[in-house]
Image (cartoon, rainbow, N blue to C red; front, side):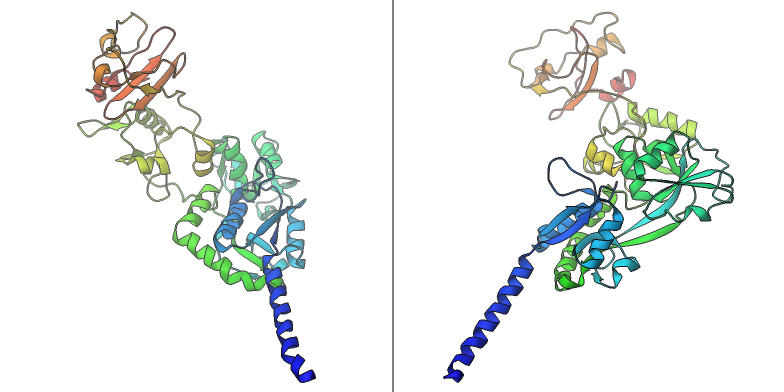
Length: 427
């Protein structure tokens, strides 16, 4: 009789083991996080964090089918402690440091971050890292680089700050002379506040850290799925895009000649019939470069390249780009050069009335600025768009219309002879 029950008992044991494995696999992996510019960035509402580490975690979850739950912790030390103990089981973007190494397995490296010495943009040009003596240095407590300031120069005072914002505030307000910190953290704060141009690096990197995905030993069986997701992200360009977006890629040293991408977008950026690049944005950049002693080389680019923005080793500058939160995460900007709004166009339902110039109301040559020829081609300015004193450009099919609206007046210039007219009268 006992022999009859043995196969049944064995089958039940197998089913129980399989059920336990399924339940374990279904349990979400916990990832600790704390607000850290560039790495973990809070979002509105109760959603998971963004930032390089947060976005990596969300991509892994979407591609591998592994459920990841983000747990907010008070500081970086708490994240490392929970990852080492197994209270948290995954840390996307972890630095491969000794603390969690004994109890975790790691993916292949997916990015690097660098620690630099930062100074204000107006710091004396003759100041170097070797001559950084008798000054004050800031560090961000409990972050990469916090222990490196002591090795810079002699007789310097080192001041620790609780976060990147406080440290950069002290630097920008002249309370310290330099800041030793990790590049993505610094750039995360600067970009969020439009202050990229106010700080520069002094000398090469002080240290480089490789970043990986850490999995606690208790869930090490999931590493093949995690690595497969990372390989797919690298292959389709997702990882490269995230590295660029969150400033993990440190820009190369300044080139001897800066390559400027120029799209065909008159009157702001264009190439005239004689081959010369011109337009409002081009000429402003030319003047700035002359003053700064920066050699430029202009090259034509497509609309797709324009949307993508500058890329290291290909396009260093674009002469005029509107900035948004997304672009601010991917590019560095000068101070604003111009402000304009786009004017909507709609189909014309009747022939336009002649445009009568009013002395002093239009810039440039009066007749060219008030030309109405072409408005009967199927498009006209929509009076609901734009605003008082705004300059707008919109492409609709072939023609390019420019409308500069001021109280009780507006003008539109069709595509004909657009280069010459744009050069005479930029918005």
